[in-house]
Image (cartoon, rainbow, N blue to C red; front, side, top):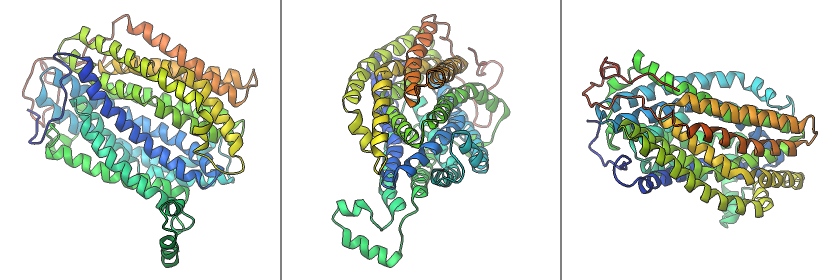
Length: 506
């Protein structure tokens, strides 16, 4: 058995009522993702105190970092799927092996991506429209390279989160994320602004303490780079704690050191499932990169507005992302238990929940768009940024409900192991629909940044229509593991002839 000596917080997704445990599993994921966005929003808020150039700099940087992160993050889906389906099939003795292999593979991959991203950061920034020699470019390069150095820490936590969600435990990652966000929120103003003109000290009425500290240390903060350092530091601490929890067996999954030694058959299975998921995740990031380059045609103010708008969008669709990950676990466990109709019911129930939720959130965003954008920008060009950012939220915000439903359906595909299907619909929606429509509105129709907003909005509608029609066919409802329990040892491959994880399918 893979249960450790600690408390097992996993929920039962296979027996009894489905909607309630799905919600119970998904709510902590939503809150975890909310805290994840909290990292980005905290950085954006405090960097915004440095002016428009600083906000534009991290907007350029984030489109690249998000792309590289997505390349490795997609492979964590393999861990979720294999853990969930093996648990549903009763093959819990395989889970420690799968978890250890996933951790080793993704950490190795993240180290490679970290070094490559650091070396090629200047080239990538130019590709997204940053102009060498400008203040935005200099700040962005500094921020990007610092963030790349911390990529392995970011992924160590992502792995922990994905494995636990596949097991059915979403609360433990939530607690760890909350701890990390608290550290980041405390570190951000200090690392970015130091002890000189730090508004946090003013708000707390500690101006005299600030003056004394500055006199003694002379520390005026690291500016934009400080935001990256704060994130990396807090991520690193969270990553160490997460891996320790897995090794200790306190979260229900038990690992041994032998589980971390890479085995060719298991690695091939992770690659088969994870590569399409990685490409799928990367298409979302690549879409942001492409649209950032198109928005850059309209100027730095438009880039800043788009950066703020995309962060707000990522916040609003968090319930959909949470339900997507909950659906992955529910579909995986039920298909592992040969309950395909129950798996489909879980997806449809989640779609209904997210539609109701996002209708309310979209209305609130539409009515308060300018106020929301205004929180994240100051300086001489703030009026232009607020106008463009508000326009983005009002145009794209109307279609959040479609985007949310798309994410949930994609979770159904991924939970079944049909990651290639999810990949194809992501490419169609985020690259073909979004990229093509945004380009047509920007260039031939000469709508500028507004054209990008309309292109993204129309694409959100088209992508869920395409994925939804395919989902109703039902051809995705087939698991990737056998449902007969066994006693695979930790140093065995998952692939004995009559006990193997079957091939990926689409």
